Image 1 (spheres, rainbow, N blue to C red):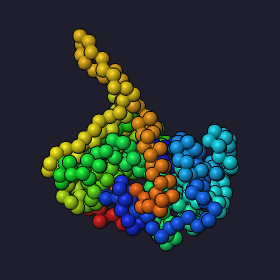
Image 2: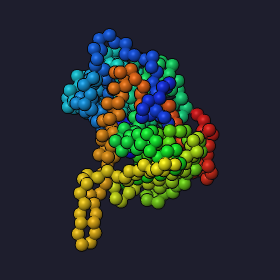
Image 3: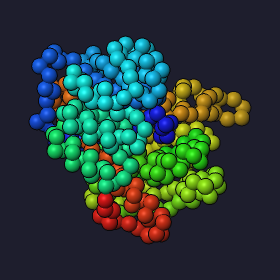
Image 4: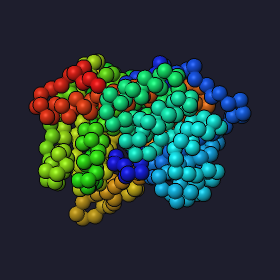
Length: 376
């Protein structure tokens, strides 16, 4: 899912939804404010599309949390969002949130290039952290961030929102319940309605880093295992300028192999004429779990020509995953306020980035790449 310029797009125990097996958190972290009285005070960094979704969720769907401050590079956006969702303070400097000792948790929804410094600043102030992907723009920077987060003992949740979508979560539950037996193969399809501008491609880190990273995370999530080898194919078949000016591909097929013996494919394209195309299949020794696209309605049209759906699939990632964005915020608040394991962790963010880097290396070098080859 692409982010605009204003959107961004823990480590010991396993939780119900995260990691290859689950997420994690440092169970020793507890909110240090004796005056919390059951309410988690929140600061939101970034008031773009994603930041506003989280602000809405906190305002109307999380009675145990309250957003008390929001910041954005554009002051009028911060103030308008604050007024809309009843947030007391709005400004343009994220350090206003970091230095506010009444704030217990921070939502980082800023441009990707700012995530690392903002996570580190929040961790050093002992604040719980919810961060949109990516954690940082390089693996070396990711490792620096994780070292600080773990050293400070604060919770960090990476917002891989697909895990919290009802379809993905239900499919994982079926796997946990043993409905498919041991997973053998998987097929993940993820295609956007239309390609992004070349200017966006130049800043995105490429298809594997920007788009397929969600699928790489879901592959770990569904397989409940770690990826060991990556083989990537790709080409520029939709918009030649993505290749000639952006130095990237727009169509890709990636084969992932896992420690548990499972393997499967991730099918990505920057353009899908029928709309936002998101499909999953996991096949195992006892059965299969799968689901297709979400539609605006379940209406069919039947006439003399055919029987067909009345609508195309939902055409925008914010529509397709709105429930997921809300659910991930609620899950984070519930984990923090109950001192429970987080559903995803910083280590999940690192693992997905390693697969992305391995895919890019495989594509460039035209060979399978072991994830162990990827170093910071």
